[in-house]
Each structure stands twice: as structure tokens, then as C-alpha cells.
Length: 367
Image (cartoon, rainbow, N blue to C red):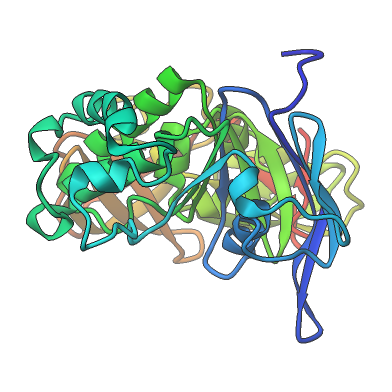
């Protein structure tokens, strides 16, 4: 993609409400045919950013460009309907008085006869051609979502903006409809900006994730890189449960019950935090590598006592009370592993999956 002009580019966008900055110097570029997720907690500014791009809200400063052409700054503004941008929101916003076919054809020009081939094509592709003369209230939530998708794609927008579009769907339907939606958008060659607060959804759909917090993008990258090379402690915790150890640096090393961890460049006496995910904790019955999930590249074993074990469907979650400081460490094990409360075991941690952060700033220490 080197040298490819972005399909959508926003530069240094800010938005103030009543003296409070809710979007703070956000810049983002989306390549043709790519899916980018704006991911972050509720209230971080991601939906406001989407509304600004769509043209239904106005930025305080910054510019928006589509295919290299300016569509909006603080003076010049292309109307929303002329930006070649499609929109899909949480509530689908179907017109209740129009049939499914008329909903899909709503954004097309020409007579009903002129629209018919495109309407029929899209309804066939989303598996709803037999509902063309039905009304939205006669459809399930998943079917309504597909109609909303077909309607948004019908005018062939070059960019699709999606604001939590799957949040109202039953969990059993969500994965399938997400996959169908993504496949259809890829077939159309549409660039997608998806807003979500669900890390799993972002990981499943995105070519690139832009992690947003307090109005700013704090990290951007491919899902694998965002997950495995987080910018700070909050980024690790946003994607999964975490375990945390604290220690004091001596000679660029920190002593823990799991052995020493490197802390290069950190002055002696400064505190650091070692963060690791439950799936990277190994469980050993007897310190000799006999356990349900032996851990490679592990340091010293530390002893803990089972507090609770629960089967979660595809894995088991076991909580241990650690001997060294009575802290709680969580470990996940594939399949069924339900040791009794009070069972003593030894835990190890994958050193290559631990993150070391300065305690005062939360910034990552590259080890």
C-alpha cells in the first residue's frame, strides 16, 4: 500500500462542547478497501469523530479529505449527501412505512423500475430476496440489519461508517452477521470505519485498529500488533483481564516471585508493574513440568492455592491465592480443568508475554 492515496483522511480533528474537548487532535487515514476500527470505551469521542466525518456534526478545527479532495474544514463544507459516504447505525433506522425493497432503493436515483436491478441484486446477496415486499416490523433484528446494510451499500459509497452496528443483535447471530457484512463490504471494495467498544469485534473485523481514549488516538496498528505490543498498561487491560505484579528496580532488574524481570533505563528505587494475561500463566502440579498447561520460556515457579475454578465453555478459569503476598492470580486452561479449592499448585509466567511498565506513568519499558 506504499504510495496509495488514502480513501479517507482526517487531519488534526478537534471538537469542543461547552468548553470541554471531546475529540482532541485526531488524525487517521483509511486505505481503499480496508476496514479500520475506532475502538475505545464509551464516552471516549469515537462516535463524535464518526458524526464529524459523516457531516452531521462540525469539527472545531481540522480537515477531512476523501480521495485527496477536501470535503470539510471549519469554513468549507460539502453536504453529507455528496460525500460518497454510507452510514449504518445501531438502530438500523429503517423506514417503517416502506417495504424492504423500497428501503433498499431509497438512496438510489431514478424510477422504481430503474432501481429494481440493484435492489434485487443486493437482497439476493444478503439472502432476503423473498422479503422484498415485506415491511421492517415483519423481520427479525438480524434481517433488519441486513436490509440496513443493503440500503447503505446500494448507492455504492466509497466509504462506509458504522457506529456499533451489531450491538443490538443476539449473541448467537452476531458473529455470522458480522462476517456476512464484512464479506459484502469487501466485495464492493468499500473502505470501512467501524466504531465499537468491543475488542473482540475489532480484532475480528479490522485490518487496522485505532485505540481511542479521552478524545485521543493512543495507538494504531494491526490487531496482532496492538494486542501483543500495547502502548501502555491501559491498552493491555482493555483487551483482556490481566494479572499484575509490583516490584522495585535494582540494577535494571526487578525481583518477583516468578524470577527477575529486566527494567532497562529505569533508575534504582523506582517502582514498576509487570502485567500479564491469564492465558500466559502456566500451572504445574509439582514443579517438574507436570500440569495442564506447561509454559515455555517461563521463569521461577511461585506457589499458590486454588481459590475458585470455573468452566467457561471453551476454557476453564482458575484463581489462585499466592503465598508470597496473598494476591490473586488468574489462569486460563483450555477445556475442562476444575481443581478443588485449597489445592496447592505452582505457577509460572511466559516471560515473552509479560509487559513491564513504569508505575508512575504507565508507559511501557522495552525489554
